[in-house]
Image 1 (cartoon, one colour):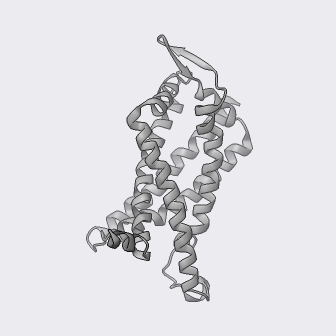
Image 2 (cartoon, one colour):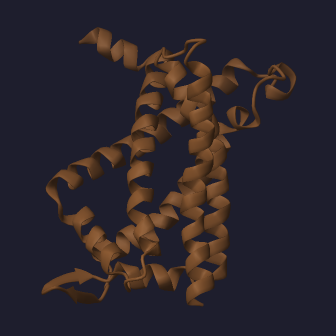
Image 3 (tube, helix red, strand yellow):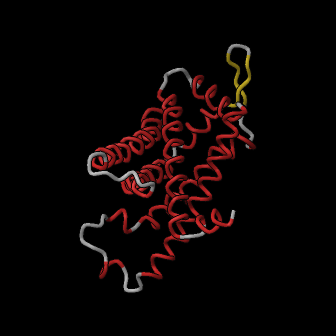
Amino acid sequence: MSWVTKTLSSTIGRKLIMSLTGLFLILFLIGHVSGNMLLFKDDGGEAFNIYAHFMTTNPAVKILSYLTYISIIGHVIWSIWLTKTNKAARPIGYGQSTPPSTSVASRNMGILGTIVLIFLVVHMKTFWYEMHWGGIPFVNYAGGEFKDLYTVVLFAFQNEFMVIGYVIAMAFLAFHLSHGFSSAFQTLGLNHRKYSPAIHTIGILFSILVPVLFASMPVYIYFTQS
């Protein structure tokens, strides 16, 4: 197993981990934004609360949740390590040594990732922590009892600072994804002149669509519930 340890501790190995965890988190974003779209359903939060209950009680989803937590931690740790390694190898800085073709997002992935991480901590404290351990009231649907996370969401997004912060964080997420999406495929060796342009285009569309959908939720709630 020494070759596995050696590979994973190398720069290439850690970039591989970054790519795999990044792609897994991209899949998580797709599932998360799809479920959260239930906030737009005009049913008093019933569909969203049932969805939130399923996501926190289903055994299979719990396993995926643990994988998501591990992926986030691994992605953050290796990104910090790679950022330090890149700076050490480039002491004169990007401004003097980076080719003009390098995107702004690629030059600032560390900063973008840090801002997204700060947002994630606040987001999990506001919603994830409250769902698991907060004193959320219960509601009944068809004889079943469910935590009313929908009311928590409505309350949070009636705060204009929360809404503005959320939208700004989604803008940073968009920039982070715009480079990370295609970069992950490239690191995995899926770089071909025939397919790379399509992957790049899909990545750009994804990096715009998903953050816009996420950002539209607090904006919609703020203007319809305030």
